[in-house]
Amino acid sequence: MTNTFFIFIISLRRVIITIPYVHCNRLRILALSEDAARAVSESLGDAGEIRLCLRSSAVLVSNVLKDFIHEHPHVSFSISSEPKGCDLLIDSVSSAYDIPDNAHLLMTEEICLAISSSHPLAHTGHISVEQMMDEKFIDLADTPSYAGVFNSIFSKCKKTPQIAYSCNDYILQGKLISLGLGVSFVASVTWTSSSLPENISLLHIDDCPHFRSIYYQPLGSFCSENQRIFEHQLEEYFKKLNK
Image (cartoon, rainbow, N blue to C red; front, side):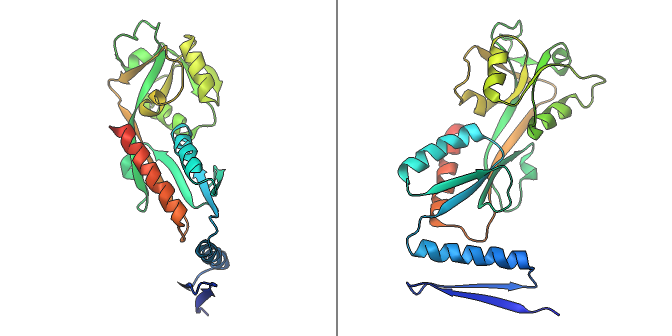
């Protein structure tokens, strides 16, 4: 037997929030109740918290966070790598066609091969998949997006290049590349916008071009005014990077 329920919450300011839901399970009921309570709290002047799931582009998003927190010091953030319980997801996919329906595209950037400026091919500006077979790669461990790009590019080859080093820190990755100890795939706009070693050149991949699309997606049924402002600042920041 199923029923239709309604939650009515009345704040001290006479703000009435009605949330209908049909055939919902208990977890959904609790989630809607929490969203309603947060809406009432905001109506009473509580800035609250923005719960952010950050799975991609941490370097770029940190710049937006810095400016937002400076302008809105009363707003707090909690950052997670898992979307459960979060208000906003920032992630990337290899194709803009894979972005969820209710998500918003921030930027599409080319995947390039990063090499030391002293590398013999640094001045050419491009490289083929066959040429990459002779290179020693610096792997980004525990990074599904990097593994996806690596596997996709070399999937049609009978062999894969040698992995010289494996690390889970993009700063260390950049240092190893700058020292000429290996090469690696990087997102072009993110890389050039970061404070990384200057003696690194980016090569276009001639016969197997790859891109990634960065997007944000609201997750909860309630979106605070502060979250809307933060989303707007995200969009404005990435628009500037696209110019």
